[in-house]
Length: 89
Image (cartoon, rainbow, N blue to C red; front, top):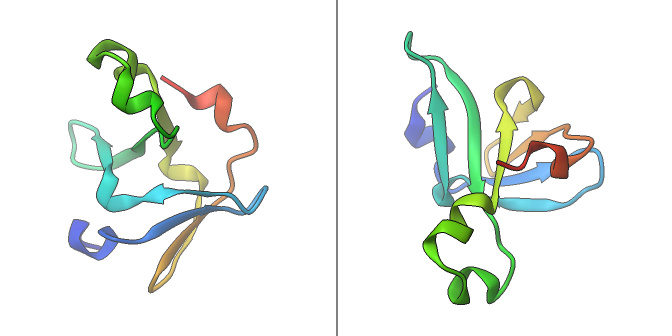
């Protein structure tokens, strides 16, 4: 699978049905051997990202471990993340 295959896909949490964001708005955590460890999404908390300082925005991230990905479809990526708040950086 190419990185371009993931771009633009909506990430949906199977656990609660929440839309977590687009892969285009994400960073990838890649290990030294080139495997993807996690997708890192920026928080979509309304104006808080606009008004907060850069240091605050660095902490408003959701880390989605690659192991939680259940299915990559043509338009969405389905993950099973039970408690997204435990995965914030």
